Image (cartoon, rainbow, N blue to C red; front, side):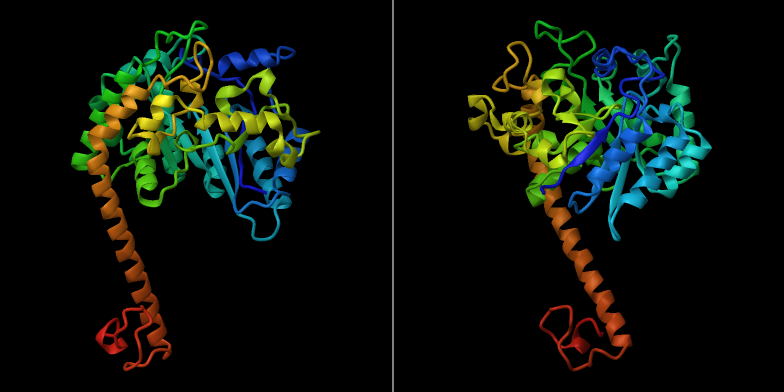
Length: 411
């Protein structure tokens, strides 16, 4: 079975904030029978047990929302208990948690830290920027509560990164946002474009266009490259480097097919993508649909294949190797065709052309550092072998240099 991961919505679209730009809040309309949506024990166990019965190198669970921490500590204790019980000996499990961080307390942080959850915290910049769109149910600011939650994570040594949604509140303020995050000591960052459409295909007031995205990313890259390229991790740039160095990427937007994961809603319903939780794309439910059947379903395969059905102009573009037409969400507007150019196309072109030469130089440095790390590792292993008497001074050096040990790692 080919690898896939799960993106789980245990509280569906329920959230303790009312961010103006949230695209998922309206998904609660899919489940109008209840105002409160919480994943049951039966759905949770069926989902984990069936997924961990498949053949995966790593079982990847991403807990999102809405706000997944509404589920509380007991739910996540049950998650890790079931993962341990249902996995075969030696199974590798990865848990990610995307949160607004306002409900993080010591008990939850202690638990997710113990089980090595990677936490993504939504923070759009300093208070005036962040609180412009990210406000509570009663309209109050959320920035202070977010910082408090992040400090709790730090206190319990939980690995986390910062997710910045780039909207009209911060798209013209890249230096201010970046400096604020780095001054706070938040050295793992990711920037996501806010692109939401009206029914007629026009952008919503808080959304950004391609030119704005390109300008933001160019400014951000220049700041990062000048001072922090090997000190601050920005996932957007890390993934581009990975694509240039290894020809692969971990983000679906840079791939050629969207069949990478499944969304599981609170009641067990299965969908192909976080951005396409729609009744016509429902693939089944964990109680009546196997993962093999979901992978093979025509709806899923047709959905994934749209990724490389890009606009004819893309075939002549020197950015195609990095974007592969960009995310379907940014292409299926207006006439809802994947052959639309991405609304971010102009921005990506500007960014790639502005940075490609420097990205390739960084790629060369990444390769050099890898080689050096491998050499040092071999040297360390060789030294350990020598101490155990396994390598003779006049024998060939185990590091593979072709020299005698005494003239290489044995010096």
